[in-house]
Length: 111
Image (cartoon, rainbow, N blue to C red; front, side, top):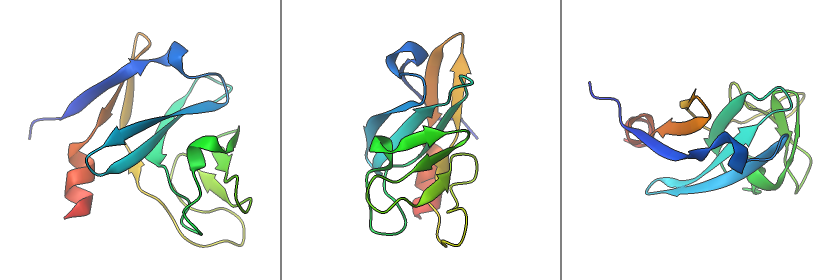
């Protein structure tokens, strides 16, 4: 199967412990950069009340939703602690600082 990688910019576009929002036909994707320069991509809405995760605080490999402080794992998309729920994770690749996400995984998950 052909991998549908979409280039979304350079890692330097995202501040350390920050995020950028990417609009796709399937909705907004939040692309996060951790303090360790790891990059993760998840849906940009909290499973709780739909808060914009891209505006949350990144700590370790997790983000805290700005609305109600739910903590979402950037690795699994699952809510941590006592909270339940999850968002889809999107494959992201970093090639010499150039970031790409794979959208066919979204298409398949949406079907």
